[in-house]
Image (spheres, rainbow, N blue to C red):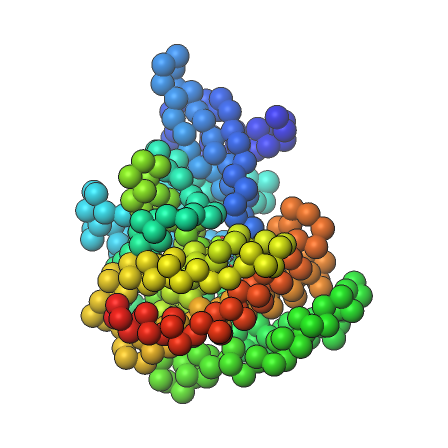
Length: 365
Ligand code: GN1
Ligand code: MG
């Protein structure tokens, strides 16, 4: 065990009225941004309780206090609407000063319960889970549809402005600080070729043809805790990027992750494609939960959202690769390059299947 980490977790814990003392912890590794620990506190010889302690990444989130204010706003708005057996939305404890975050050694921490009997999947081949995930994210949008957008801070400006993301990527290619751009010529051509397509949704938003909504903006299904036994969604987590956005990006980002036949960083590109069975189940869940409030234009651009966000994320991974892997945590050399190539392959497959994807949205809308 890392003594420094134990000490820090203890210090964080001291800021809260939590019964018991730190007994053990493990680090959770599926997120790419924040540092997450599962912490066990021992109350007495027979009772122990588990919590999640999370350090907010302040390279990515420049204003953690605003992130935490948004999360409080979301809890206040949604808690009264969620009944006990519904999928809930994560919220964090207030500390002894009444704040839902705690500063230790200059880092921002937050604490919540560990949701019992829960699991977050990185890959599944079970249509029940796909439906559940679609339903949970659709429901999330529905719950927040009447939250006045001005109440939320923009935690990362232009987070899903695909046009600006691609411009930033091309800028990084020209800077090429580590001389890595020579390795990615075909990938650069891919982005040049699809720049216009990738800008479609942002252009429609600017023209006022698509509405802004309160969106989650990071709808991987590992951001939904599921019940290990029933596979029902228990809790939507990772609210750091909840802010005004496009419904199609939430739908699309989820599809990108949930309906890939491979994992997000698969190195064997022959395994990567869009699984239409998974896509259909996710779409059925999402569109069922969103019934009644999407505009026709949103429905008509839903499938495009999947293509666009997949291209966008590819450019983000690849830009970070060029920049020396400062943003997304990597677990092996060239990890961000692998991730980007996987997303490019997936985006190409989505473009081939686009008509069928669109038909499916219409079927369940
Ligand atoms: C990051 O940390 P995590 O895995 O929840 C990223 C998302 C990406 C995702 C790709 C704030 O989310 O935008 O889609 O990785 N979050 C941020 O796996 O940039
Ligand atoms: Mg996230």
